[in-house]
Image (cartoon, rainbow, N blue to C red; front, side, top):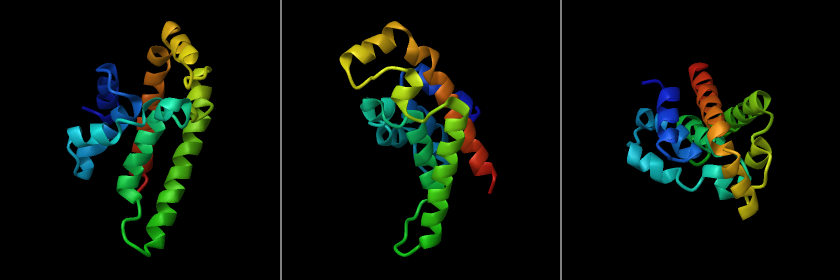
Length: 146
């Protein structure tokens, strides 16, 4: 199963966008699915506040696992992961218009009114799978560049 297929399958199963993207890569980085799902659990819907899209957060977690600094003084890893983060967010924004959840959905999901609007208009169903797919594809592209 491809990363995109896995991330969409997880999203359709009602895991959040961050969980869906992060978990689809987890085994490659030594995490089992249960761990990945727990780590990303609080990042969906822009951390429940409509901030950075959860699909982007999940993708950035993947990039952190691959490129992130883990040793004190390892400036090269820090610079590399910072660049990968910037590259990802810029590409996601070019493809989708923004990487901010509220902007992507066109409503303020920090409020009950905004969440209800998103649900009533099927925004989570109509748009979020596209963002999950986009984030997954961009991560794949970045990982393949190495």
